[in-house]
Length: 304
Image: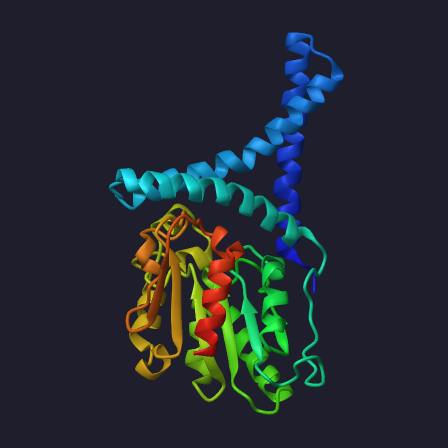
């Protein structure tokens, strides 16, 4: 299957480089600077573009979330901003790599059948975001591990859930009937819950969601794509999902979130009522995925 998300990230970064090159050439002509200086200027502009985008998302999160920022918050916000700028660009590069973390699901693989695990990414992402996780997961005895590409990226969340349902059943079968644990990021947490509603606790073991907008996010109101409409605070689909969530299933879930999340607004929207919640400070939306503390907390939650 074609990795549409990777193509989108190539397009985004390619466009940024192209615009930076045009601007650098224009400035070199206007100010009569050398070609080397123009190249350096273009690269600088290209590197600044993602930083500006991330900074804008933090500002939007504060404004749309009506957040009152205290002096204590400023330190955490600055830390989150800096780490998110770095994490965002590293994650984007990882997602542009062709099939970066494809792993076997054969039950005879390493750690076969011990702790089957499914990793689910968020909107307009792919399996590349899980690269920092695999070594620790394998060392902790999880396997077989399956990482998904949810495509097309902007499909209905229920369509993604149908895909995940098939993967869960296949992975359970490959693991000798053991229940499958799930770790999901962002929209992936909603996909996981929608799939859990389909298969029930006989198929799924523990679920850890990271920065998932269980109660919606106000930033989604700025976009009209189908999955983002489903992630709005007043989304009928999300209201139905939350109302139908079985209490027995909620006991399986752990919600991990950061108060400085720049995409889930308000940040505590990432906490699903009735589930265990783990709060972090100083991490943005993708920064949570690259935190060793978050990875360790997730492993602990999976092991119960």
